[in-house]
Image 1 (cartoon, rainbow, N blue to C red):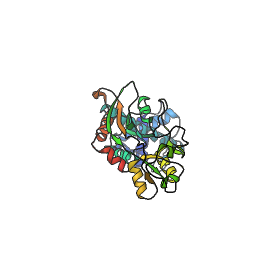
Image 2: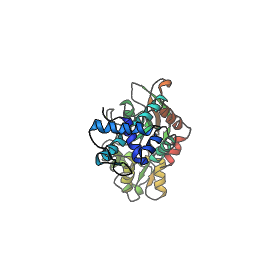
Image 3: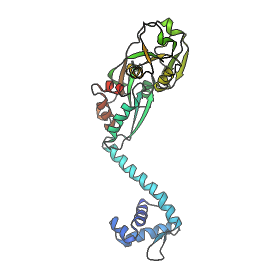
Image 4: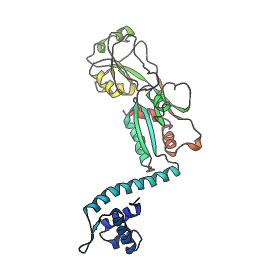
Length: 305
């Protein structure tokens, strides 16, 4: 290869410092050695990189292009070196975190902010999932950690779980919806004739899940809890929402909470990650697990909606 990292470093230093002598001083080399490096690069490429007329050597058009592209290579090389050092010290190059859509993104981003302040260099990828989507992401190898996976995990194991807590549900309708003035508690027959707003399960491989839907009931399917909330506020349908969210919207006059004769059971939410020997567990994953196992984290997270 005719272009070396050493030559690119020399070219970069000369352009930044303005002279061969200053660049040589920065690179802890003698000026003659730096001059030789550039002359050899010019000979190997058969191009002139510097216009040496005048008191200061200036980059030619070819030199500017080589430096521009070469700096991308230098940055990539620096990132590679840092990556290798991180791996050697136990920090993963990337941590993929999936969280159930009922957990407010604000709470997840709060944890991410605290993690990024560690400045360990691990890249974090966050994805929101619905119903069985978290379990699907974990078992399908799309996530290294899932937060708030609902209900029991799929058969077959291969993962470690920690019960974070339970989420309570509230049935809510828009103030101008026909059920808003209906006598309570609402029966299944009362609700069956009205459209339900449901969020689509994001599972790709596991069988999709559903909850709170009556057999034969009409539906409007949306992609996340935020869209479900908006649809119910607009009176497009009815359904259950996390109680903390429903109570906030009811206090603002945007929804009305109604009691029902058949109460939807609370949903257990789990923290889960692939089973492995503790000695092989990356430091980034271990850090997230520790933060999320803290007592009361889920309750605080749900209140941050």
